[in-house]
Image (cartoon, rainbow, N blue to C red; front, top):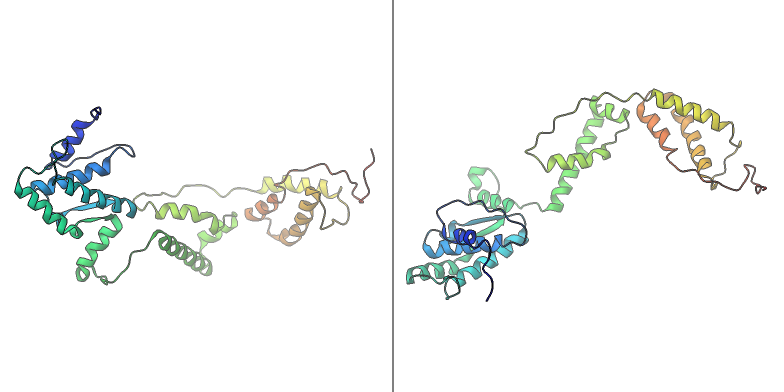
Length: 281
């Protein structure tokens, strides 16, 4: 004989207290979907609910499909004796269950998006949309969001938007903001107030970098090979070339940040003299 379920009293109330709105909190796999199916089936059998007036909203299409299947089984369970007294109490309740099974397609189980879409299709004139519209899936929604972001960035750049230019001056690229944009789009009911922050002063960083470069440049060979295996030589070659190009733009923090990135590497000992000969020990 199986042991009684510890929360059987709560489960019984879910099945039988049909005139009270209930908030059920429980962990994954605890039986919430099954209890919802049994509650709806009990409501059909008692006459409290009608199948065409039921709407079960889920997070995913998969969960909606599972709930629909369990509701079907729960209705059938009302027609046969089972432990716990699930059989209908009268021929009238059995007739209600049979009617619900015949018209099960009238029962709605789906996501909040599909529920809203159904309401719009039922009232296309009042809602001002074409009844033939289609819902976006997650992939299409992401593509549309990314396209809107790219269009916004292109428009801001072409218009010379001051805030966009200020971001570029600090080294923040539009691509860096895409994750933040996705978070804002996914939380429309949350307000994200802008923070107050001054533009970083990169003059101190450039002063230190310039002193480092002047010291290093005196130690470098006149010509740096493209195939050099020394990471310091490779970084120095790239740094020297870029510095010639951006020398007049050192007032921009983004320029200094880009120059600093060249030295984001670890030095290693290379057993070779600068002139290419093997080191002596």
